Length: 128
Length: 209
Image 1 (tube, each protein chain N blue to C red):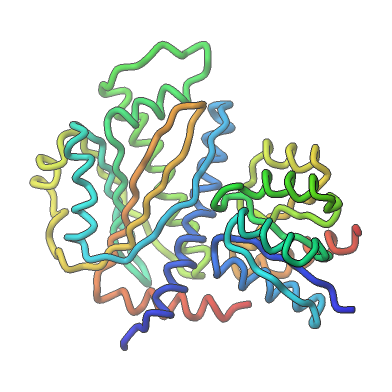
Image 2: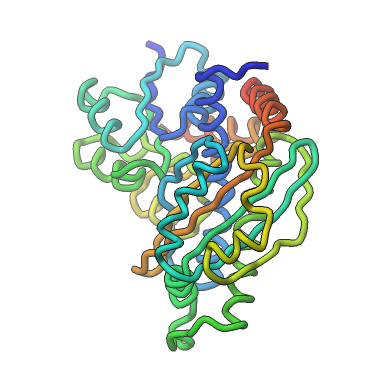
């Protein structure tokens, strides 16, 4: 079965980048997309929470990525399936991710950062 | 070269994301310096003629005095960034950023103007750096120019309203500092003649992945 991935980001461009990089790791991966926290919860519920990975932006239309993670976990999604994929380098946010048990992954911020970003995602995928 | 609506939409999306990333890092630095939690909200980006964008400043005109920081940038693409803070919001920001032991409310004076200039300079430079980084181009920034006063006085003393048909990348940012709401408006003025270069760069960038 190809892995199923839910990508949530208010930026279409950011979703394109994440999808492209995940495809380099798993060419057959299946994707669903959401552009807000609310849509993320709706898509997850609509598909029976059957995603292998939830890649969530932090700064998106409420609920933000952290709150969305908490809500997904309340609905039974294991923390090790959730990653906050963000440009935010905040220590507060890293602490919060650690506390929740979800992964914190820095977004690619330049073309040179795509390969390291792929490695960060690969490390997350291999956790589960 | 005609720019179709779809290309414009994805270009604006990419710009919003790059500006978001740039500001996110700047705000994190401010947060660490001030030991305050600062939340950046989802920014909005629109492409408008300068005259239309400036009409958004009516709220600032009504709010009384404001601080304006203008910064030119040049290189493969050139333009101008303009950051607006109303006086009330800039004081909210400064008071929010001060450490507890310094937290006597401050009045707007020369020192505060200098602080605002430093802060806004950091913000504008951070955004321009993020833009150049994401597009893979080199951009040079000039020294910023800071003005404090009523909008109409400021706009009358600058070339703000020249080339009114220039397109503007109009970005509204809002963020919360320690339970105080502070709202800033950041505009990117992109002259028409370099707009196509910007789109071209963005299209190249979109194919990097």
